[in-house]
Length: 253
Image (cartoon, rainbow, N blue to C red; front, top):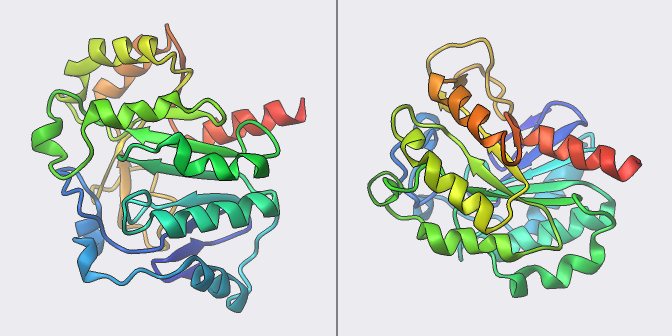
């Protein structure tokens, strides 16, 4: 096992990687302050090369079936982290791994087209565009990308781009249900994840990226309604790993 913030893994099934710790998104529902991570300018970025060296030095169990998850403690596609994130994507795609990242930034096709030749199958790289609220974006996600600009990431067709409605904020996210439907139809979105808020309140399931049980999934009733309604027009999942497994199975068919 390795757990130093920049890397977390407890087996060879999945490794969480961050090139910095903290985020300037200033989202009202953010779980990072609960872990002591706040504004990114208080934390040093580490290079992709240093991350790879950490993996080698700590004998982290990893093989081509290990899922690479980028950026759970940072915004991995801001100007601060983007270059190192790209290097890591290239490195792990060449190793044959599946790679996933979530972002509240717009990803331009021109920024990632150089990695397209490295992708062996559709779904080896998966991008999740995080949109927890639309109408309350300005107040609840103060320093993040404008929603309309963020959603332009769905113009990328070479890799699956997933709408990440996570976390569902009770009595907030659901008020945008019809807007979500409009965006799903407009961008022809195939896959949506409807996810829970991470809190200190103890529940039956803790988060997968921490050794200590200090953060837990805290589902709310609105999740079920959103899940049910969106399931009528697209594929809906509870966890990002369900999307990963779906595309991995398709590769094997």
